Image 1 (cartoon, rainbow, N blue to C red):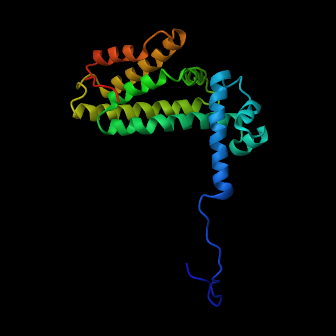
Image 2: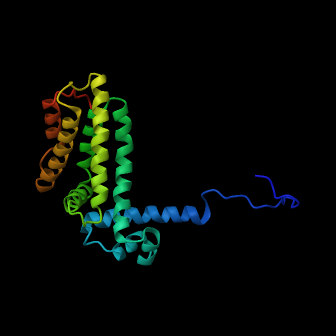
Image 3: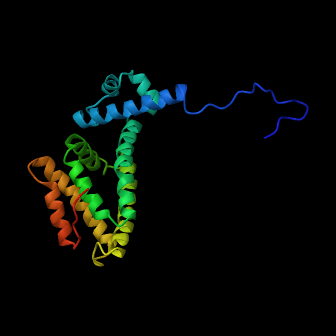
Length: 214
């Protein structure tokens, strides 16, 4: 855009700054708060962990936590979204390559090393079936998106010959979600359960070709 008529543009006009200074500092603070909240909620549960606990873990005041996230409910959603972003992008990439089976197997194995976080998710997903729960809408949308993504990934895997043609992709996707969620609950009750081995057994039942997990 040119300068206004009759008013020459100043050579010293300020330039827009990139993501530095206070903005970058604010983003870093938000990441620290989300990391702290994930640890606090995993250790003490969503209801047991307070904003004061989160602030102390992150090295900020409770007021600062509220400043960045508005409420404990919004902070919870930020924690959930951060985890889904971390595992969802790689899983989608493998799904697009026809490797959804290997991606899911790797995820199950990864979950076995993250017991506190798995426990938090299991507890929250059960609590969130109540429409009044602050994470209800999040989990409802997440379930729909995960199922839709799995359906597409299963269709791609079938095109590559990695999965049999039947039953329907919708039913296979729903079954995979149910098995993974159910296994997590069993494992939380019995840490000696080998989730990876049981999940592989289910995949063999549905005719999946199992390759070395990477």
